[in-house]
Image (tube, rainbow, N blue to C red):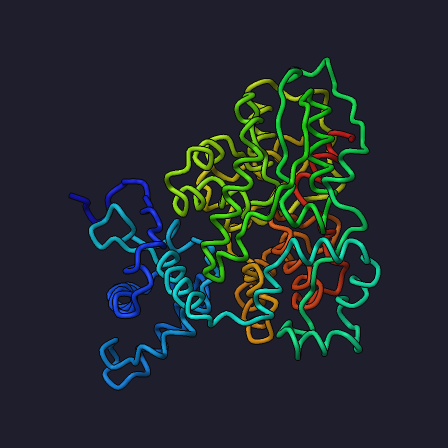
Length: 449
């Protein structure tokens, strides 16, 4: 029997989303009430995200000050505020399985959203915003126009985006590249360092929608680092991992994507290659979420076991083989934000471990939510709340680099964009803001590639 305060690792159950009971409204309401009552009595997660303050205010302002006088229809804002960051499950909650209370707050919020999606309550523009492949394929063909239209301060287009698509006019949006990572990688003939200790290793890079369409430089940096260290890589991008669709409760679409990517990666895995995911959210999906959503597919399971986060793979190469050549110190300190979905992989702070391989370079780590939460943080009703959630990170980033001589980095490109905006505009700086960069780009600089 599980004991409160025990040291057993958190465990998760298969997401039985095709069982009719999973979306039964009465059963969902009963489970929400059970879990919310436990959360009300504990309150350890009050400062993690906006779900918990909303829940506690709801209860405290009720007639009895207890959950019994809260109407179930008022649970919707609590469910909506969960960004599925998993930090309550991974770092705070003492009641996660194997504890007998069996509490998994993020997956319960997911369950409620699956029911909402099946009832047709997900808006048209929310679905379009989550269609990263459709948006990326179109926008990369007209990148100049797309980036002009999405740029902050564009008084013509941003008010329209806010009114029609519910995207806050002041939220920084990622730019689109003029070519995709997958296409560009085929035309870039990298020279593999045959003198490197890891020469002979091979890996396949899963481009992820963000690196493929928005920031190819992340994937390009990983490929150059690995080529310098003797590792031959190939870039594949079958389809987006489906994290945006999972946030909306569309698990049928997530299942379809999991099977598509697993099938594409199968021959590479059979050849003994590791699969490198360039964004932590995608690595989390492939390692942990897909096997719970598609539990009986051997290809999905094999992919989960073969998947590495980018910094995780580079650190493993350094430990197992050693790195090629001497790393060069960077011109300034690094403030490194460890993304929630990197922490949720339970692999340790691999980006920090990687950057600390660079000599004579100060690395200061911040482990706290940025407040972005995928598409959640750019919506009109959430943007300022997201900035408020990210304020401790913004404050620490300013404190770590008061002169603006260094770098601010996050493995999550959306968190990085969010934090850079916060540091520049919400930090009260009188000096330039630290330069924004992805950790693997900094590693590439140190490698001289």
